[in-house]
Length: 134
Image (cartoon, rainbow, N blue to C red; front, side, top):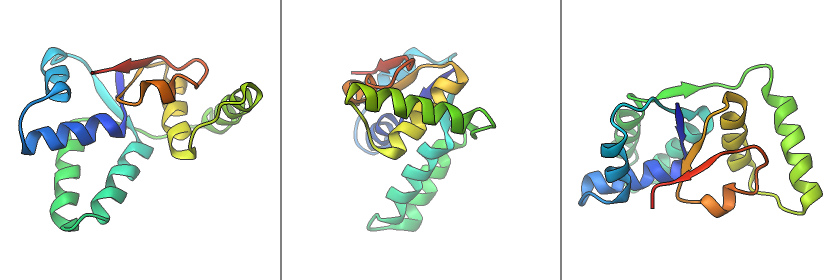
């Protein structure tokens, strides 16, 4: 399984409205791959839809896009892993935003890579395998 970050899904939804691009090409090249998202990615996308000029329409687009993906909800391992990753990052002097660390922790807990357009940002997270589609 590969977890998808918000940046990838936002690009994919934009490309669906305009013209195919790198996110669409990545999907086409990985047709048999099992894809999932952290529940925190769903939260970010829903927040973006709520803030859109047409929130109902955007919310529908988000939910339609997310239907095909496995949603991963944190389990009992999550809090301790989050704390350990945050501590290790603080010791290195490199932290990232809370939502991004929640998304990264989900992928680390599941032992799967995270596909993102923000590779440099997520590479600060210990034990996270980061993939890019650009």
